[in-house]
Image (cartoon, rainbow, N blue to C red; front, side):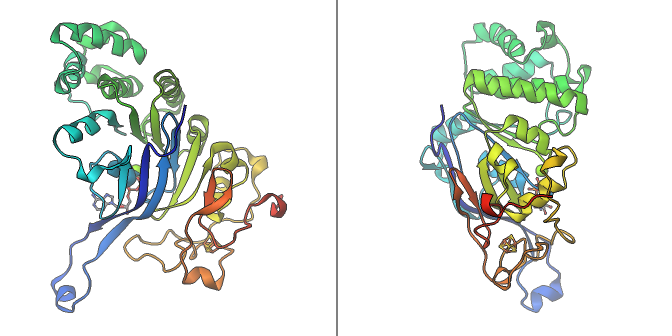
Length: 337
Ligand SMILES: Nc1ncnc2c1ncn2[C@@H]1O[C@H](COP(=O)(O)OP(=O)(O)O)[C@@H](O)[C@H]1O
Ligand code: SF4
Ligand SMILES: [Mg+2]
C-alpha cells in the first residue's frame, strides 16, 4: 500500500560555505558557497521505493542526509507525516531517528571494527529500547536470518566478512530499530558487480515483506530501474523529472533524463535516440547558471531557458518534468533513432 506524502520535501535548499579570501571579503563580494540543493521538491509515499539518480555531485547524498536530518536545510522544509522535521525535539526527535534510518554507502567504515556483530546489533536494540534485555539474543538471531546471514555471524568482527556480508550487517543494524523508512545512499556502489544484485534483491525482498518505504540513491540506472517504483532525476541540486519507473525509462520527458539514459551503457540500446546528448561539462555548483540549470548543456535550449527557471509541471499521470518544452518526449513528438 502507498499513500501520498508520508514524507513531503518542499523546495529545500542546502549550501556549503567555502573559505573566503580577505581581499574578496574586503571588496564586499558575497561569501562563496557550494549550492548543493536548489529547491528540491518531491513526495515519498508510504511503502514505495523511490530511486534518486543523477551525475556525481548533483546533490543526491546531500538530499539523503537532509531526509534523515544529518543536515539541516537552509531553505524549504521536510514534512514527515505532516510535521516539519526541523522542529522535532526530545521524544519526537528520537522517534523520528528510529523510524527513518540511513544505510551508509561504505560498509567498511560504518561498522565499528572493534565490536562483534552481536554488540553492534545489541547496541542498536538497546539504544532505542526495542526489547527486554533477555530477548536481545533471539532478536539478534532473527535479524541475521532476515538478512540471510548464519547465526554464527553474531560472534565475528566486521573485518571477517566480505563487503556484501558487511552491507547485510549494516541493513540488519538499520532494521533492528524497526524503521518505516530506509534511506540507502549508494548502498552497493562499493561492492563487486556480482554481489550488487544479491544485496539489492535482498533489499527488494525486505521492502515488500516489511512494507518499508525506501529511498534508493544510486548512480547505476540499471539497479535503480530494477528496484524502484518511481524515480526522481536530479541535476545540479534540483529534481528535473520524477515519474513511475517504466514511464520515465520508456519515455523521458526531460532532455537531461534522455541524455542520462542515452549515455548509460547498461540500458537497452534499442531505446536510444541519441538525439539529446548533453554537451560540455557539468557547471560548477558554486556559480549556478541562470534560468534552466541545464541550459548550458541542452541542445534544445531556447532564449527563454537562459533567463527563466522552469518548475516541475505535470506530464502525465504521476509524471512531472521541469522543462519549458512541454511536449518534449510526449508520444506524438517521440523521435526514433
Ligand atoms: N560537507 C560538504 N562540504 C562542502 N561541500 C559539500 C559537502 N557535501 C557535499 N558537498 C558538495 O555539494 C555538492 C553535492 O554533493 P553530493 O550531495 O555529495 O552529490 P552526489 O551524492 O550526487 O554525488 C558537490 O559539489 C559536493 O562537493
Ligand atoms: S528548459 Fe530549456 S534548457 Fe532546460 S531542459 Fe528544457 S529546453 Fe533544455
Ligand atoms: Mg553521493
